[in-house]
Amino acid sequence: MSHRLPAIRHEVAQLKKTGFESAMLYDPPGVNGTTVVTVLGHGHPEWYNLPVNPHVPWGVRLWKQVVRPIGVIAGFAAILGFFVHYTKYGPKEPPEDTRP
Image 1 (cartoon, rainbow, N blue to C red):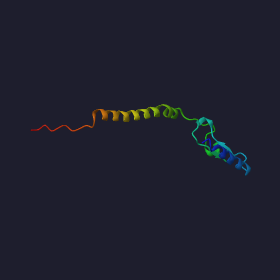
Image 2 (cartoon, rainbow, N blue to C red; image 1 turned 120 degrees about the horizontal axis):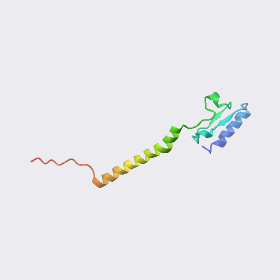
Image 3 (cartoon, rainbow, N blue to C red; image 1 turned 90 degrees about the vertical axis):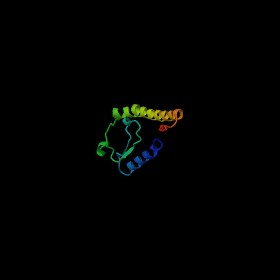
Image 4 (cartoon, rainbow, N blue to C red; image 1 turned 60 degrees about the horizontal axis):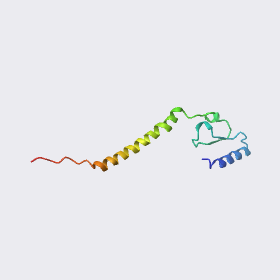
């Protein structure tokens, strides 16, 4: 997203030249790079129902930094376990019929 910021800043400058003196780039630091950048024509986030000082809830951070990586590791371990078991024991075959 950082490669697009100069173009977005240019857009804000154009808005200011055309009469939107309070135009601004809404890229709050409290969300830690969610790659969501918005150009506000009137410069007041609350007018657009956006929080002035947003933050990422602790539950979302816990999910993304702890739970999701554990799930990915568990998924790969399950796939690896499947292949190891299959190569060691082979496919399950039905029991032989021992009737006379």
